[in-house]
Structure formats: structure tokens, C-alpha cells
Image (tube, rainbow over all chains, first blue to last red; front, top):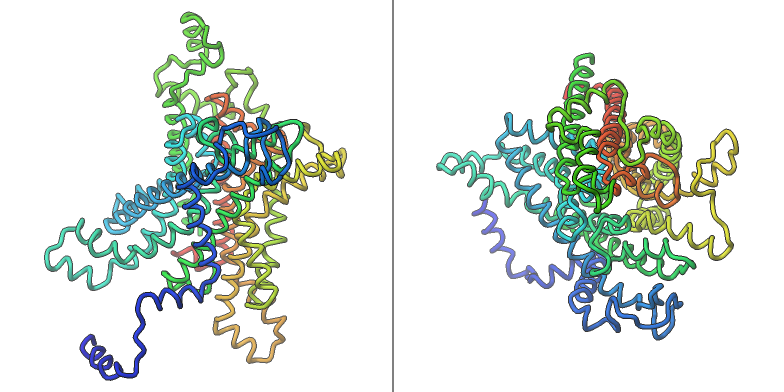
Length: 300
Length: 315
């Protein structure tokens, strides 16, 4: 097969337009304008988050003007009840949102993928125990589980990362296990066994690359949900301590409990969350279309 | 079929047992002592000890666990150590609000999600499809708690309007006020799930429309309407039933947020209150109770499903 393909390739080489990686990226981008939009917003948010102290006109907790101001040139997003500049708070808030979202999803995906691979590959009683645990976690209302654990551990950035990661692990285990079950009867696995590879090596060296795309797709598509979860926990007062680290969700809650009502204060953080989650969702859809051709166009 | 039901029942009991143990252990790991929270930080050691003795917190863990489990199994959900209220009584008072919220939310999800998903699939790549897809991705991106907050804040500032807050209006006493109270939260809570359902119905229907029997139906001269409604939609809704069952767990989580925002006296707001107060017994009883509801409803869905679609039973 391989030899024939090479010969055919050689035959057509003179007439074939060679495409470099840039041209491939360009074509992929043209086909996924929404994905490009998502990526652009995500990159912009990362830059804003990283450079927050230099970009923000004021400090996150600096008293920059009168309280409850409407949007103006001096304060484009208005000010909160303490006279803090909302635009600056939203710029600093990007750090918390992105850091928690990315950390939680990456760690959750790594752990979930590893467990899912082992569960699917080893099978037997171990698979049974893991799958029944997953059943249990899926049966339980996730948000309630998260707030119970945060209630027990106490709210902190680390604990929020842990609970969001825990929340996404069961779903990942299930999907990855399914992929491994479908994959492990292939001949390359048998071949690896035949030349004496250990089970560990077969899983992490031979099977892992084949479920990698799937993991990346799951990971991107979960980022939006993770950022929503972070905002929701912060809104309930169970996120990172609001005094030190401004969070969009916590600001909406603060605005809600403030009197007199100041709508702009609640408005802009919500726009920030929505735009961020939208960008990640669009990116996730694009990643799925590009990396997982089986699902292409199904929009599931 | 009977074997299938028995097997699923046993699995459900196992799941609930694991949940009961996990929630119990989890709450015992909390560094905070409920007695101190109850008495304040100036409490004397004797007083703390007395509360421990009274509430059984001094007993070994396994005794506490079996005492609690025995009580729960006989229908006694225990008492709050903060207010002394009986959890079962409180639950009975709060359950109708949450049930109404859930029923209305499911109505929103189905009435929005299914027709829009069908529209989107039938007119694939047309204007209707784009509108539905944009609405769906926005619905999945905009946080529920933000919409809810804005829906309360904007009318109250602009027009001085507020829905009935803080008390539960019975549907039978005052249907209009009841709808003013439960309509907006159900609509908002249902939006995100409806967005997910639109996408599911769309992809499921697109898949079914590729099937040979659809081509056959068209070939034998059926009108497009009959093909889609009679043949395609019915089959595409099979996965929807399961997903709706699984949706319940997520919606109960959403109820925690939405009930808190709209100050509805429901079970969701109750569990958040108990968690914030570190009211162990209330949290563990409520958690187990909610898990039992979710597991039982999913079991019912699976059984109905296995009965509707014989292919499922044997897999």
C-alpha cells in the first residue's frame, strides 16, 4: 500500500501544487470563520489577562471615582458602589476566569483521559468499579456536589480548580473509555503485545496518540462550561475570595445585593462572561470539526 | 424485560448507597465544627461538648452513619442543629415550589428545543437554521444567573416592577401571581438546556434523514411533510428522551442558583442555605433525597425507554 502510494505521488508531483503548513492553516481558517473569531477573542483575552496591570487604567481595588457612576469617557464601564473602575476590574477579572477555567479543564482532562484509558484497556473488575463510580457521579446533581465540596474545603482558587476538574472527570472517563474499547482490538495493539510491550507501554505509547484528538476536542469544548462554572460559584459567593481577586461572577452578585440599584455594574461583567464563554464554545465547535472528522457537520 | 428492571433497580440501590457514604464522609472532613458555628467563637469547651453530646457528634463515625441511615430509611430526615426544624417538614413545605419550577422548565425546554431543532434540520443551511444555531450557541454561552439578575434589576429600576418575591404564591389561590413568580425563572433556567436540546434534535434528525427508509418513504411518493413528521421526527426523538432524563440532575443544580436569585422558597435555595451554614445533617439528608429523586426518575426513563425501543434491552 505504502509503496504504491509513494509511486503515485511521484507520478503526480510535477502537476501538484505543494501546500505548506501555512496554506493548510489558511484553508482551515477560511472554512471556519466562527472558529477564527473564537480563537481571536481567546487570544485577546489571554493578552488582556497577562498584561492586566499595564493595560488597566486603574487598579482593581483602587478608588478611582465617585460611586455608582454610569459609563463615561473616564470610566467606560462605569464604577461600582465603592467608586472602583469597572473596566479595570473586568480586565483583572479575566485572569481569574481564564486561569481557573484552563487549569481545571487541563487537569480534569489529563486525569479523566488516563483513568478512562486504563478502565477501557484493563477491563474486568477494575473497569466495573470505575464505571459504577462514574455512574454515581453522573447521577448526582453536579453543581450541588461542587457547592458541597467547596462548602467543606472552603472557597479558594485552588479548591475551585479542584471541584471543577472533579465535575468534568466522569464525562471524560466515559468518552475516552468508549474510544479505547473501540481502538484496542486493532492489529497494531496486538503487534505491540507480540513484540513484548508492557500493558503500560501499550496504553500510553500506542493507544494514547489515537485518543489524543478526542481529548483535545473534549478539552476545548469544556473550557466554556468550566468558565461558566467558575462564574456561577463566584456568584454564589463560593469562588475565590472576592476581596483579593476580582471575579466577574462575584461582581454580578455584589451588584445584585447593592442598593440603590446600579444596572451597569451587573451588566458589563455579564457581557465579559458571555463573550468569553461564547469564544471558547465557537473554538470548541471548530476544534471538533477539524480534529474529529467523524462528527464533522453534525453539530452535536 | 424483568431481568433488566431488576438489574437496574439493584444498580440504583448501589448508587444511592455509595452517594450516602460519600456525602457522609465528605461532610465529616470539614474543618469547621458545627457546634462552634452554633455557639459562636466565645463558646466554652463544656458548652461545645454538650452540643456534641446532644447531637450525637461524639459517637464514632460508623454509629453516626448507621443512625442517620436508619432514620432516613424510616422517613425521618433529621433536624437542623441550627434551627431545630425538622428537615422533612421543611422539605414538604418547599418541595411544591421546586416541582412547579421543574415542570415549567421542562415545558420550556421541550417547547423551545424540539420545534427549533426540527426547523433547523429541515431547513439545513437556510436562514432559519442559522438563526437557530446562533440562538443555541448564545443560549449555551450566556450565564443563567446573569440573565436572571438583569431580568430582576432592569424592570425594578426602570419601571419599579418586581415579581412576587420571598413568599410562595400557590397556583390555586392566585394563578396570575403564581405565573408572574414562576414564569420568568423557568424560562431563564430552561433557555440553556433548550439550546443544548436544539443542537441535539438537529443533529439527530439530520442523521435520521440520511437513512434508507426516509429515501424509501420519499420514493413511494409521500409528501415531504408526512416523511418528516411521520417517519423522521419520531425516530430522531429517541435519544432526546434519555437526554431529558439526564437533564434533571443539571436542572436541580440550576434550581439552587435560580431559586436563590428569585427568592423562591424551594429545595435548591434550602440546600445552599444549609451548606453556607455548615448544617451537616440537613445537607446530607437533602443531598441523598435529591440523588434518590434523580436516580429514580432516570430509572423510570430507562425502563420506559427499554419498553419503547426493544433494541436497548439486550445491550
